[in-house]
Length: 158
Image (cartoon, rainbow, N blue to C red; front, side):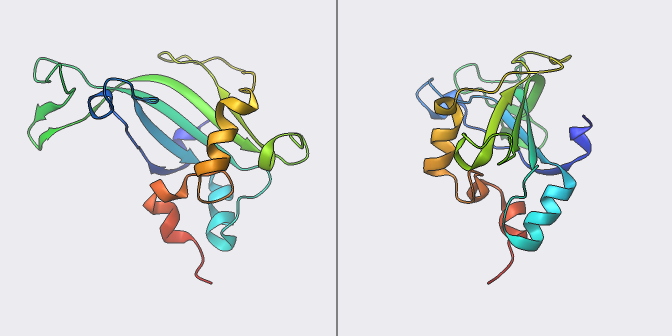
């Protein structure tokens, strides 16, 4: 709830045009962290039990001013990728007690890959769907801090 009022950390994009038409995640990922979890991370460099990270997806904007081959659009600021309509909501939760059997205690949910309204509840993805990649490639406790300068900037210096 109210995740759009949480701490916004960034919006990565891996468009099809840069991935041979086969991007695993071809939409913008608008990522928000629940404020108390962000503060704990900024103080400790660790993710607290109970951390929630929301990822709202948006499609790449399409229009008459956009190149169908690349998806890039021409706007007053220049050529680039711009956000279109909302297309899904996902939530990541760390709870080492409730999810003791999951690597790091993290679980991943999808509330639908469509425009709002999103589902009110969701089943967790199977471990191999998300957790294995996060475990292998994320910099900090299953979170891809390497892609978010907002997170890198607040990691306490040792």
